[in-house]
Image (cartoon, rainbow, N blue to C red; front, side, top):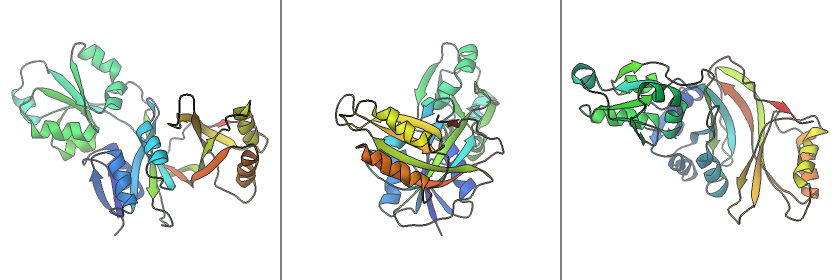
Length: 296
């Protein structure tokens, strides 16, 4: 049976994503994003499902940096999951708690996504950050008498037998997180999902240091070929201040002409180019993501 590593513990949005694309596989929780990727690299797991970007908070830099600088694993698919955050407490607190809670615990992105609600309802409350929303839910279940609230999804509430104080406390209704599916080199797995959004090819481009206007030339290589880009993002190369590489998502699979033509043109300009993956993109819901922009 295929082993799928995901950011745990049980009850995370990452588990929801992993089960959506590989429902018949063995799902193994890991404590951090890097350990998920390490598990695939070292052969403990066949695949890893890790978060890459959130519609509200932006990119998950830890995933991107670890993929580029530490464990280079091919991207073989992606899945977008709607994010609904709920306020949770222990069943003991529901039955016995009589005072205002002293703290809210969750992943920093989840707390940020519920900023307006928390400021209105608990303006003076203390925050404590956890590795994941499910970690917070698990902690509350293990410390039921602690007067602490958590923010997590309904899967975590059910998994850890917690009371939902209030549902859907997130600030934005269109909140979604996109997850990458990573595999080891030369391993082929069929990624599927409820609804297909489209195709993507993700490239890493490093600009030459002595070429003025290089980024403009890079974008032009896509533009005149009418290739649609859904994302372009810079990250530091970690070789010196001001040195960056670019991650570019193209809305189509690698073909025989267009994308190889882009790669050849960019290499002629002195750019470093690497294809990180060419894959299908799925969504847990039928809602289309209105995030693509054509480069012209």
